[in-house]
Image 1: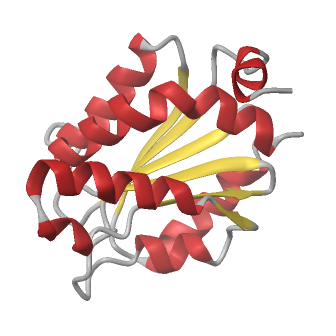
Image 2 (image 1 turned 30 degrees about the horizontal axis):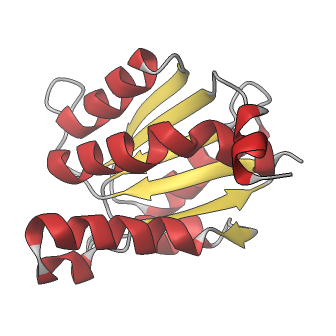
Length: 167
């Protein structure tokens, strides 16, 4: 079966949890989280949970483990904490849970980012993987980076990713 045939069989609506990892953002100031939510909804998907979690590995891990147990969620998208500062803990925390890494996601994201901003793209550790049959995508906190990832990678592939992750 070809890629296009596989993609045709993919669900059109995905149930997603969105997590912003930040010590400073609030429900009112979280532009990146709102962008993800609005884009998903416009794409016909359902946002089942939206959380803002401080840069605390134990708290993030606990929330993720709870979300991975939920049957009404097929994907988790995070924003924030993917850089290289000492406060950026998202990648290390989520990596503990990933059963299969989707290397192409980070590679493609960094390529697209390079085309937009140049060599600064090397500081992004955006990643995606599968944990307990659910897709987890980790995005930077920047609104521009989130828009790029959502428009150019996530919306075109989220259905296909979740179909493959649950087979």
